[in-house]
Length: 115
Length: 115
DNA sequence: CGGCATCCGCCTTGATACTG
DNA sequence: CAGTATCAAGGCGGATGCCG
Image (cartoon, rainbow over all chains, first blue to last red; front, side):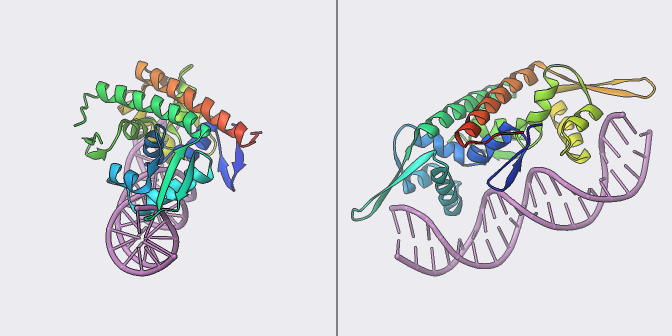
């Protein structure tokens, strides 16, 4: 197996690495929204009601540091912050699309309907 | 958001559902191996050295119950067990392939080389 | 050989409160 | 509005031991 270390953490395959960047409960929902247009923090919070401030803040920070999104602060009154997609983030959103389609297929096989 | 409940657990989107079936640290590595030919329990354990008996057993059981792989016991001496891919598992392995390729791309962008 | 059961630790996440 | 800090909870996974 192709073991390797990145950011002081041991990985065993490329999937683990990809999931360390865009995995978890919230990063894909965030990327999925930001891919089309810039979003404000409060818009994201309203659109993903089950996320806590702590997790939204943490995920946005990591996605920004990892180059999937960018953060821009507008010095208005009241101040405004916008998060936009990057080229890397756009590629990632295509992976999200694949997983969404696959998840939807699986849900059909299991006879699950969302409401 | 399309909330729904399955198996007594709340999901918020199709990705969450897909990941509940083939996510986690080990299910994709297992599917990735079994997709080409049947594997024995001990072969899998040897091929994924960092997995514990508990997790290998647990993942194989869940993948079998969820219809991604099948389990066949041969009444030989000594007894032999083989796990094979199903049609559902084959579809899942294509998702694994996508994630592997994407992870490999990301690793290149980050300048990471596995050994 | 191919598992399952029990116990336990850590890391992720949640809840709440506070700040510029 | 857009976060950060602190503490608590829970789930994933590890270690070990037992069994057919």
